[in-house]
Image (tube, rainbow, N blue to C red; front, side, top):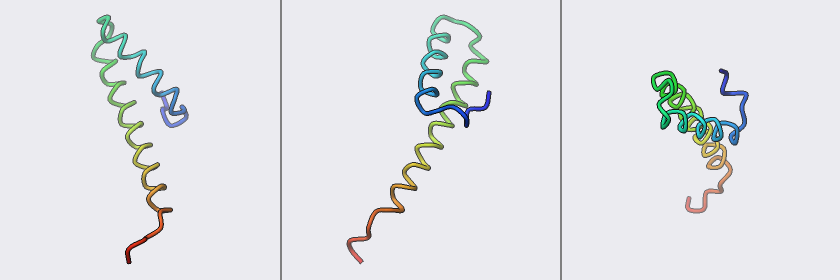
Length: 62
């Protein structure tokens, strides 16, 4: 599954579905790996968003 092509909302929704599958006890090893991949992709996107945001903030105190 290529996570880079999914939107942020789709990633959150898939994570919720996978977490529900884990709670029900289905394929826990595979689903835990998928959760890790989804979380790392979400973290990567958050970091990129913060980098873009911090690049545009004016430097007030120089």
